[in-house]
Length: 436
Length: 170
Image (cartoon, rainbow over all chains, first blue to last red; front, top):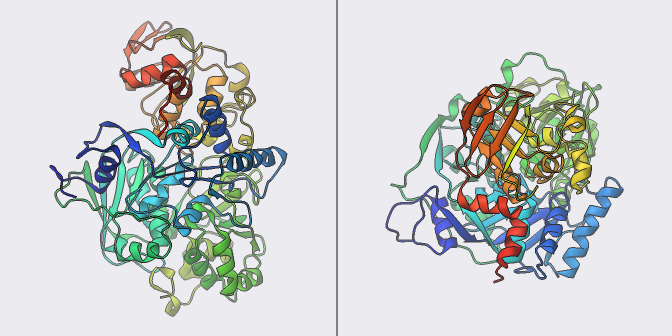
């Protein structure tokens, strides 16, 4: 796109959706929204607001997804009632993308897998981790229920154009280091409001060598640094991932070389090792070898952050032929039905079950203390999820530690938080822990 | 209280990075009624808060108030508990949008956030951003609320605002 002034990928996408040649950080714009989503927690309020507005029909029945993924399979009567609100609204509005359990999955793993969120688009979701789709080169951000209602009715929403901050990751990744470690490290460096209101653009050779799964993990946690969005310019990996899935035509955007950034931060990834975030804030990040002996009661591998096939494969590589510590519970949650099915075909369930894990159907479940692994007073969990706020997974006096699937699987074997090297033979260490 | 732009009330003070799980834990997210949610607002942080908070009280926090999830149940619970407005050094962005969309005004002032103490009696004028601490006899000025946001507050939130404007369908 030829423009007057150099722009970042984020500015270009927003300008094109606002019908403008250019936008500046701080501009208030009204933009066309390509796709909107809500879940069983946020959509009931949105549907209520939609009706209060006096709206009768959604702007486009093909551009809205309702995904009951948080408290499903329905954990109690009230949750069942909330899912019923979604189901009835989807039916009344003839929504093309309502996912009943059996076809469902965690929204931010499901929509990319279905090819419903695409590069160059503006996507909003009534869920804070909507920033995940930025990994495809889209402008994607979380909003509340009222904003979702406004978009369902009008197909448009107001935005403040964010300043962009560029994070350049250079060098080769150390063994067992994944996208999760890079984003935890970054949040540790800049803090939980280090990117407040900003678009975090991830780039550099280390990102280019990463599979989509790790990129989704990184964009997913931009919100944990206060970011409005996380974004990665599309490349060969992105296009290969999307080409067979895409449900609509799409357009790719790239930052101009002279685009201006509020800040450019560079990280040498050869200095980054497997990370863990200690309670009760995601920025409390340490090298896993430097935290001493921390025993744990439960390990959870799953969530919109790390419940994808690659995450399960790396966990399986570590757990193969081993047993989890007797004092510990290991819960594995494939993020979507398709991931679940493929993991089963590949024999990963055999490994998990033999190790002593329980396998849950796709759900957000324990990540937000919903169900399928809520913590009691004084209990400690290591999870591949995204937040370790006080009481997040259950009792206000429980603790959550955040790490990658490799660290989680190794720690399940040891019974305490540890580096994967502690349970794997030296020669078996793989690049990023993913078998090539 | 929807169109009231001035108030005098008691201050409840909180620290930095108060997340939405602290404001309203996820175990209550199977509720959508503001009054029901208000019974549990902030209970993990300060168990007495939901019992003692009164209509017109003001919440003061430090940095990054409302970080974490996009649950609009958080500003809804605070508003339903009677909180008139929130003053903080900074807000997390989804919470900021949600607050105004719910008709809950949010003011940014580093000085007020630092100096006003828990239990102080203060006056807040949303139109001017003026904050007067009656207990300490000190005056502060918050960043003015942008005109667009001010309209949302006057109309009582985004939905009444859109209804008033007669929303445009494509």
